[in-house]
Each structure stands twice: as structure tokens, then as C-alpha cells.
Image 1 (cartoon, rainbow, N blue to C red):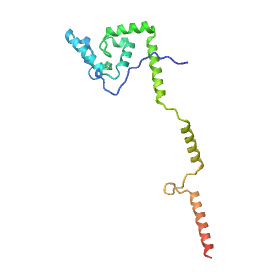
Image 2 (image 1 turned 135 degrees about the vertical axis):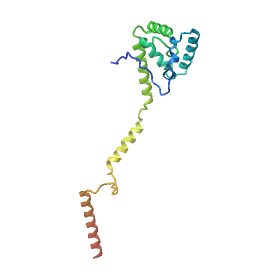
Image 3 (image 1 turned 180 degrees about the vertical axis):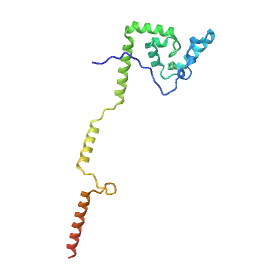
Image 4 (image 1 turned 45 degrees about the vertical axis):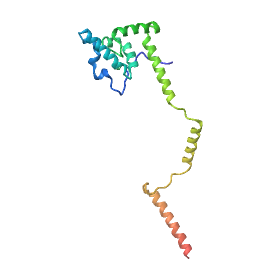
Length: 172
Ligand code: SF4
């Protein structure tokens, strides 16, 4: 049976994110002046718009209500996240986090399966032939690489004696 995940992990990226570089920009509630707050909100939203993990960041922020009670996350304010959560509950029920997490996991599995190319029949046959060829032919003797063993010494002596005997017979 397929296991169900109830967690949406925080996304990661090799690209530095603006919220990591400049967290104060996203803490709009800390700005007392309303005009300045509106300006900062627009800036934070612009920063999120160019973020490569904005979609997954939004899912994480929605799934982690207690950790995102303030600030701008994925270009949304706390009020906007509240509205989005209600929509998700209406659509998927109270277990909507697990529904989204499962859908994400299935999508990742499909993408991974698509990346792994199946081995063709021809490639399998070629690999089998190569394996048979390698096991049928002994490895070539490479004296400059292989250590001299007593067995190899004895074989060399036998070859030398055989060669000397043959030469002696031929000369007689
Ligand atoms: S989308 Fe999320 S991770 Fe990206 S800058 Fe905005 S708050 Fe940070």
C-alpha cells in the first residue's frame, strides 16, 4: 500500500533567495509607518516573484501556519495565506496538506521515472556478448604490470629449458 505523506518540506535551491539575504525586507509588520509598510510589501512581493522556489515556498508557508504568522512568504501576506488555506480546506478537506504532499511526491516519482531511460533489447544483447567474450578469453600477460610469482618463475624456467633443448637438437 502506498504510504501517505503529511509533510511538505521547505524547498531548497542553489540560488540565494532574497529572504535569506535580507530577512528584514519580508518582516513588513515591523514597519510602523503605513506608507513605508506598503512600499516594503511591494518590494518583498517583487523579490518573491523572481524566486525560483516560490511555488513550493507558498505550499510550505500554507502548510505551516504557526511558523508563518507574520511576514511575506511567496508574495503573500498573512491575510492572503488565510484565504488560500480556507480555499484548500473547501477543495480537499481538512487533510489537504497530505493531499498536496502526496500529489507532489507522485509528480516527483513520475519525473524521476521519465529521466531513467529503459535499457533496450539491443543494449542488453551487446552487454551479454561482451561479458561472454571477456570470460572466454584469458587476460593478456603483462609482465611489466604483474608481480613475479614462484609459479610464474617455474613456468619461465620450463619455457627456457624447452627452448634450449630445441636449439641444442637443431644444432646437432
Ligand atoms: S518565495 Fe519564499 S523563499 Fe523565495 S524569496 Fe519569497 S519568501 Fe523567500
